[in-house]
Length: 151
Image (cartoon, rainbow, N blue to C red; front, side, top):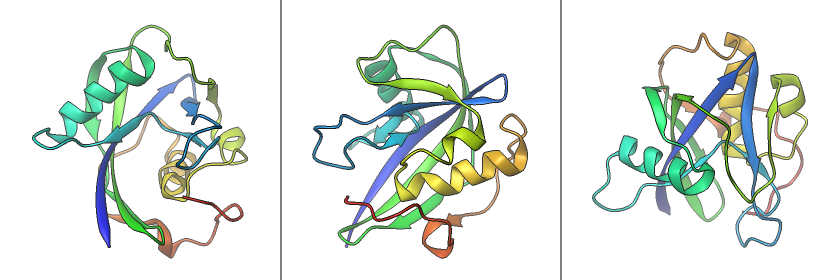
């Protein structure tokens, strides 16, 4: 099974978290809400990939980044290793995709990729700004998965 390394950003403001909606016409997880980020390209470090994806997706540079616990998730056709970072951004996102600032309670009701759920649960537990690095979280061992998902 193919393993994909992905760097994602957890951006919090005033108790809310930034999420963007994937293109509804896209081939992978269309219309799902997710943390900004993307695949690590060959030769890139995790932090370089994160900073590149933030520039490409939301038009902003990260002022500060802090790595968080690795999240692993197995989809039927691939294994995802999410490398989340707590990120400080200045300004507002500039993207053609739908986006917003959501409380954890609002965000958990959105259609999210299964692999993003452990990070969202962690925000709810730790109040968004108080997250500390920890051990791996395996999303396939958790029970709260909202409906079927087509990767």
